[in-house]
Structures are given as structure tokens and as C-alpha cells.
Length: 149
Image 1 (cartoon, rainbow, N blue to C red):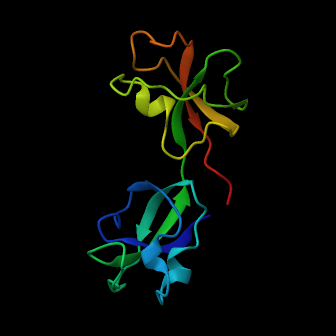
Image 2 (cartoon, rainbow, N blue to C red):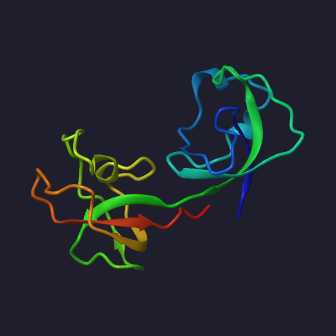
């Protein structure tokens, strides 16, 4: 189910994805705060539609203003321990990784997923993009199901 919200005009394009970070200090006293602050913090969203004819509103956070869009929670691609990883099961991230130059780092520490949370695996993607894990972890790449609103 989609939600109507306001996002920075640079994000106001169908297909754009972002992780909602919650209220910023500049939001205090804004007349549009109820339309902007209606998402769940830490959840990854995809813009599904841009509201036609909506005006650009001024914003203390986004220098180009904000526009009305429809968003839905979206899946998060992540690396999880390969053992017991199958579609429909639940999994946690294996933990932080200091190897930021590794091609798998963005999947070992994905935006929109927390280390202490369990997520339902929607799909097994396959082998991670790295040739070997410097932490000697046996990982598989999965798609976590979107968060329920």
C-alpha cells in the first residue's frame, strides 16, 4: 500500500529509493511537517508515483524544496550467513565489516537494515560479489522482504 509524502525534488522521480532518516532539526515549526514525517524511520522506500500538478514547497532541509510523491516500502538486498538461508526464512546480518573497499560491503552493511533485527528473506539472489571474504564468512546474497507498514 502506498503512502503520500513529501520528498526533496531531487528524489521526486519514480523508481528513486531512499532510507527515511526521521525528523531533522530544520523540521521544527515547519507547516508541512505532518506530510513529511509520516514514514517509518530506518525503512527503505521506493517512489512509485509523482503527484501531477503538485507545487514545489519550500523546505529547510532540501534546498530545492519538496514535492508530493507516493512511496512504498521496498526490499533490501543483503549478504547473510549462507547456512539456513532460503526464501521464506528469517535471517540477520552477520555484523559490521571494516573492509569498505570490498565489492560486497554495501550488502554486508545495507542501507535500510539493522544488525540486531531479523528480516524475512523474499528471494535468494546467489553468490555475493566478492571473490573471498576477508572475515572468513560464508555468505549468500538475498533480498529481504519489504517492511510492513
